Amino acid sequence: MVPGIGIDYTPAWEQGAGIGRYVRELVAALAREDRDRVWRLFVAGSRKSRLPKPPGENFHWRPAPLSARSLQRLWFRARLPLPVETFTGPLTLFHATDFVLPPVRRGTRTLVQVHDLSFLRVPDTSPPALRSWLENVVPASVRRADHVLADSSATRDDLLEHYKETPGNRITVLHGGVDARFLPRSAQEQQAVRRKYRLDQWPFVLSLGTLQPRKNHGRLVQALSRLVEGGLDLHLVIAGGVGWLSEPFHQQLQESGIAERVHMTGFVEDADLPALYSAAEVFAFPSLYEGFGLPVLEAMACGTPVVTSDLSSLPEVAGDAALLIDPLDVEALADALLRLTSESQLRQQLIQAGRTRAGQFTWRKAALQLLDVYRRVGDEPAP
Image (cartoon, rainbow, N blue to C red; front, side, top):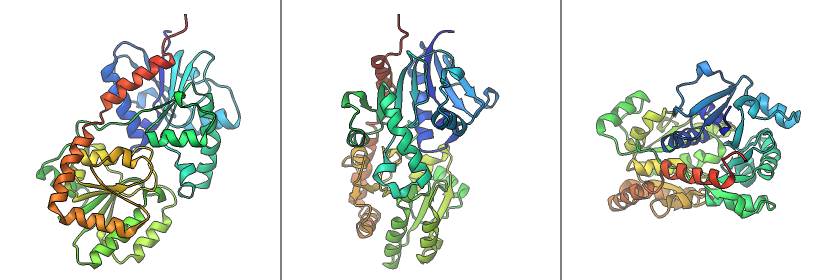
């Protein structure tokens, strides 16, 4: 069997949003750019019969019957040296896309992708068990890997600060991109997505992300409450599944006095996102920490003005095309929302700047950069 490049596609198969979407888009872009190499997509906890058609003729599914959790227990708790090639077949290089690098055979080159270090930067926003797990496996994976991919310069800086034994020349920043489907949608498409997710005709602020403390939805509700008290007719739509440690948010929402103005759609299908972004008056992303912040760029591409945090990677992503605020400052967040809903000149300025900014981030650019990293790390078999 000819050795190939292996990619852990498991998060793309298991996760609808976040890292899952990042990996799906990146692999799809690789398939458009490369038709020569042999690619093997590793999927834990699946069977080939359940998987769709591969993204390219030179891409091949390599499923494993064991779940990702079971494999991680074998690899990192039982210390079983079961190489990932047991499932993929021979590889020249393996790209671990989700923080954790499994065992590989001697001679296989390796990359591990670290999307963020939120479990170190904002530890209280992660469940203790998850934090403990990542604190053990991430540094070990970073040490073992031949090369490390970081989603942003901010994450690269975090890696250099927390894992000082990792030299900077072993870390490459690989920004995500914005798919071409993200563009302003018609009033008809916006109306259809409003009907689907039971959103009436009222003006709304949109926030996208799993319901968990790091996304800072609680302060967003507080900011909206102040605006409503001031007479502004505005609603909040939170699009995303329920994550961890979300009970305090639900309690806070019930005590806010504006619970009827806050609408949680649950997970939104990828195909519906452009119209949902387009329908919003403002996109608010006051996260306490992000490794990249792809929704900021997607909202910009759809012509929606953005307010986001001045922390972690978000200034790097937004540039001067959004209002940046301290995510701990409810007054600043409320003021930014008010300005973006009432100052037409500012809205138009940021809408134009946002579309230009989003156009600078493409999945093709990311795929070409990644192919170059593969070449430098060594994607050809040794002679």
